[in-house]
Image 1 (cartoon, helix red, strand yellow):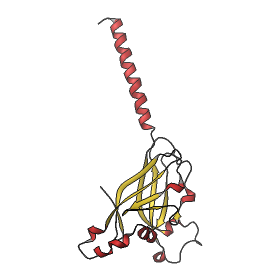
Image 2 (cartoon, helix red, strand yellow):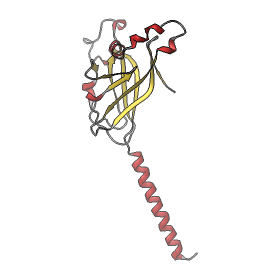
Image 3 (cartoon, rainbow, N blue to C red):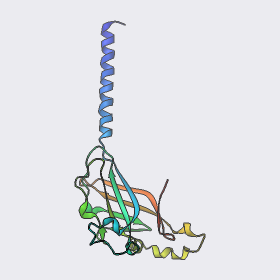
Image 4 (cartoon, rainbow, N blue to C red):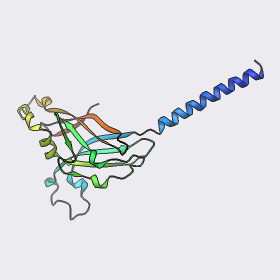
Length: 178
């Protein structure tokens, strides 16, 4: 192999490395958000002791959506676009009271997260969970499983959602599909 062929081979290898580097950096800088559904209490959203309820047992339960930005770029979230769906129904921001919508960071920086929530009673009512009440006998709890979808859009109208959660109406519990 002479020097000219060796230089051509080095040029081809350098071109391949530069294209691969470009592709990898573009892949790392994509938008990626993790959406989780968790159960919580109203006490999680109180700011001052005067807003807190007297007794923790009296605090209403919440269904919270936690969003974490694990991508490479900040994302601007539309607060009015949040929804939770299941049992053939969909809850939007206009259907009930939501907590935490005014405290969403704009933009959502890389590595940061926030939570928004709706009340569990409204969640069950608006998703018509009461039609599952006839399965409340022991041994039929699996029949009260409702697959959930939760999501939102960003400022560029990119949609983000998760379908990895179930709600068991019989025992009022959220569960992640694994």
